Amino acid sequence: MAATSPTGIVVFKGNQTEILALVNPKAKWREAERLLVAQASAQHHILPQLRLHVDLQNRVCGAKTISKLEKDLRAVAGDNLGIDNYQVRAARKDSVPTETALLVNRNMKAGELLQTTKDVIILGSVPEGARVETMRSCFVFGSISGTVLAGVRGSGDAIIVCLEVAGGARLSIGTASAVLHLAPGGMRSRTYVISAAHGQVNVDTRVLD
Image (cartoon, rainbow, N blue to C red):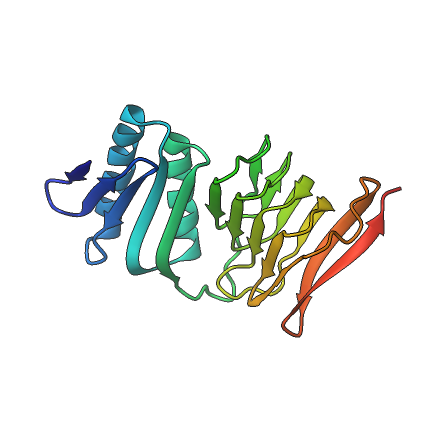
């Protein structure tokens, strides 16, 4: 499967698992965004089961620009979305972040990839084979046995919070990462808060009141 916009701004390719959208990095952003969202909607209408993977081909974008694109694409393609291969332009010191959290009201599926610029709240579990990538923090009201990467692109202030962590879970915050070979407790009466300091991942266990 392949499709190209009349001006060559967006090129779509596909296989049995995903639709890949390649965005021309030299195109004007407003036109590129408009064509990408419109054509992604059409492609998803035909093949709604496939993941939408957007490759911005090393374009430099503001954080608000990426957040808006993510919001518009989720409106047409749902949660099974990935946006990557871009650089985040440094924000002005006086800018105020306007992003809200992304709520996922279900268990993730094995093999599912969730990428976002926002805080993530998952009202379920992240099973083995599932992967979450967020530029901010991740809160899981269930267990993590898959992969959760918080603070991607170097932000070490993010945290990961969950009710249970299974052995084999891969956790990362900023540039610090770890694979848990043994579950730290595995009791539902506890909350696990994962943070990073001095290049290492720390897992703190807190008892629920």
